[in-house]
Image (cartoon, rainbow, N blue to C red; front, side, top):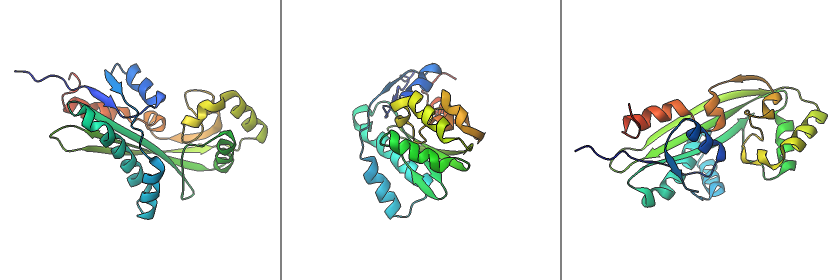
Length: 202
């Protein structure tokens, strides 16, 4: 007897991650994990965890939060943090903070760290983390102000206060890394693992 194909549940309300999965033709449901991200981050910093381990802890906490109600599925948790000059940055709270972050980033590189955890009953958790390095050009104050005005609150959902799929691409001199990692969902490793677990046709 052929076992039913597991469904994928995305433990995130992120629009960009949902759009990536939809565009790739991946059937899934999504649930807002609603975890206390600040508490997890502070715990990680207090424990002197690496940025990669903090991102993985956040991703795992999100998957774990919704797993009990979705134990017959594959549950995917994701998170992304940004590191610049040794400091960790999170999503800006408002446009003023977004402007402050981008002013610090200009003329220098920063690193995006994207982490994923996949949970499934009677199987070992799968964890994956990837990095991308982006160099912001020496943007003028006038360009930055115009950029923030045109993009508005939509950029507050991004840890870097930019979206490469829109005008945010104009902020950069150089980008090294996987496009999907920058968007917060390293897609090919995820598809390979979901396929290996029987969640997609081979």
